[in-house]
Image 1 (cartoon, rainbow, N blue to C red):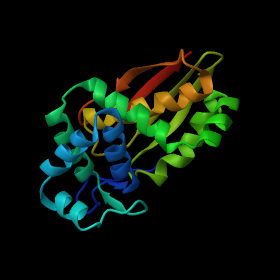
Image 2: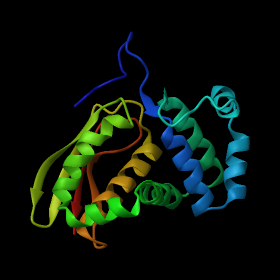
Image 3: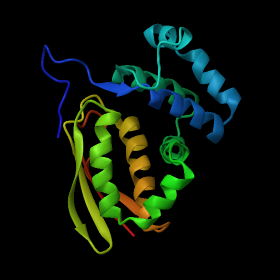
Length: 194
C-alpha cells in the first residue's frame, strides 16, 4: 500500500481531476441541474478559480482539500447522508460502460476487489486498499494510510465500493464498516456480504 500526506515535507494528498466532474455530473442526475449550479456558484477560493479557468482536467492531480471543500458545499445545500451514498453509487454506475458492467457480472467479488486494488492509485495518491479475507458469501477489505478523508469522503468512497461489489455479487450485497471510515480516520475495514 502507498502512503502519502502526514509529516512535514510530505505533500498534501491529491485526487484525480476526473472525480470533480464525475460528482458534478452525478449531482445533476441525482438532484437537478439547478442544484448543481447552486453548488457550483457557492464554491469559492482557489477551487472556484480553478473551476472558472478550466484548470481542473480529468488526468490532472489536485489537492484532496479541494474535494473536501466541494463536498462541504454540497452538504451545506443537502446535508443528507443518503445523497452522499447515492452520489457514490451513481457516479460508479455512470463511470462504467455497459460492457464493463457485463464483464464485472461474470467475475467473482474477490476478483473485482483485486482489480480495485490495482486501480485505486489511478484516482488517489494516498493510501491503498487490499483484500484481506474472502469466503463463499463475503469479502473483507482494508483501506490504510488514507490521509485527508473526512466522514463524507469515506461515505461516498465506500458506497462506490459497495456498488462495485454488487455488480459482481448481485443486488443483495450489503457493506458493513467494521472499523474506521470516520472523520479523520486514515483507515477503514469493511465486509461485504451477499
